[in-house]
Amino acid sequence: MKIEVLKNKIILDNVDNFIPKDVVECGQLFRWKKEDDDSYTIIAHGRVINISSTTSKRIEIDNCNLDDFNNIWKNYFDLNTNYSNIIEKLSTDDVMKTSTEFGKGIRILNQDNFEMMISFMISANNRIPMIQKVISNLSNSFGKYIGNYRGEEYFSFPTLDEFSEVTVDDIKNCKAGFRSERIKEACDRLLNNPDELEKLYSIDKMDYVLALDFLKSYKGIGNKVANCVLLFAGNNTSAFPVDVWVRRIMQFYYPLDDKSDKLIEKFADEKFGDLSGYAQQYLFYYARENGLNKK
DNA sequence: TCCCAGGTCCTGA
DNA sequence: TCAGGACATGGG
Image (cartoon, rainbow, N blue to C red; front, side, top):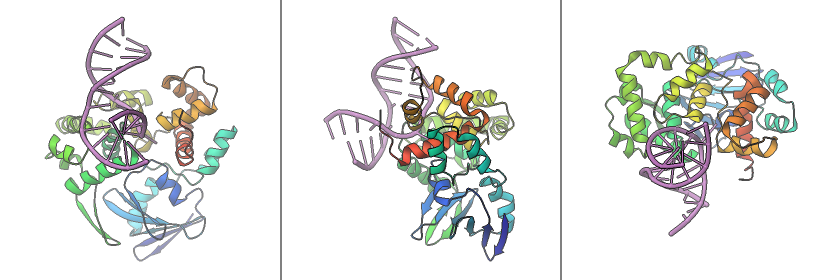
């Protein structure tokens, strides 16, 4: 990979498996906007950047300097991981071949732990556009002002400290519904126990089962949400979040005796091992974008 | 009007 | 353990 530095812009050349649309729209990220020129503006880590690709293997990151690229975005976009190898290892049957070909530009992002925790609590029994709206409401109401980009005002996702002043009613006003109490409760627990916050930010170093149990001890976090936090913030690629779409595609294409989530997880673990998280994301993206029959 | 959404919690067997 | 209903909100 070659890096070119321009004024407020970084250009990456010779990058494999990085397609902005796949990375942004595969379901792992909630804070983004598609621009008129088909580029994507992303809000993360207290910054606003815009990614686009003019030709394959060439990625432009606008509103970004070299320090931020090295300190934040290189890891955020998982640029040290070889996705061609992963795709090759996962393409052992027709379903996986089709899914990995469809989502070949996906990279699993390394996102903020606290933001993922709250974001996926909001995702429970909710639609993606609505989840995005609630997160945007919370950010615009309680987050820090980042700046104006292409005529739009952007705010960062609220930090735990910023949540400390927020009431349940404030959260309800952001349209979080019945999840508001759970969010408030989780924030209070983290605020009152600094070691809990430290633990939340150490899930990438914890044993998978221990980390899962830790996350699930929060009200509003079950198996699915915990696995999402582990995968998208904890960098734990053995996590295999089973949601309606993954359930649908797994039950439809694979010979599973019963339809329980436990069996699906076990099947995935045996089939994909520590690449389960990647497999899940290819399957989810393929199932959702192709409107796999509801069953 | 009813149904459902990147689920989770609670209850009763 | 496990099935079944409740839960805010909004779009189809």
